[in-house]
Picture 1 (spheres, helix red, strand yellow):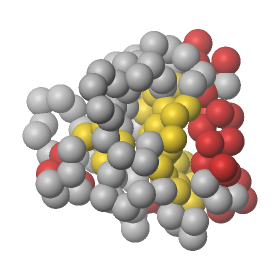
Picture 2 (spheres, rainbow, N blue to C red):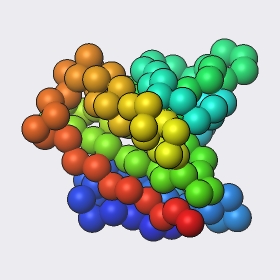
Picture 3 (cartoon, rainbow, N blue to C red):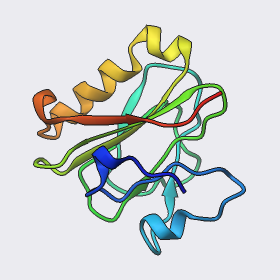
Picture 4 (cartoon, rainbow, N blue to C red):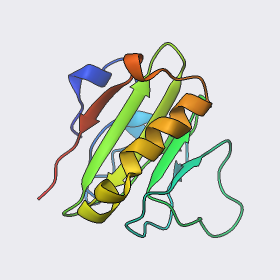
Length: 128
């Protein structure tokens, strides 16, 4: 499990699907994912999904105890946080989503929950 120093106070990590390390991030929490479609859509999460996950490429929450994530290969995983507001996000940023504004839309969704762009820190995870 790789961790980013800039997000040290926030439970987070970058992992492979081979590494069963999710429980070390937030013990007992189910991982909330979307159906990633290389879009610019960012969703706010208040609870685990009922049924099939919606299509989106970024998740934002201010709810403690929710474990949000993205799955990547050649796209970049981007984790963002405003510690003071208690707002976190995970974005799947491929070239198409990046050009279309997935990070900008993630920041806007974070702002709707009280985050301020001047306080947001971000870590870009491993990619190929």
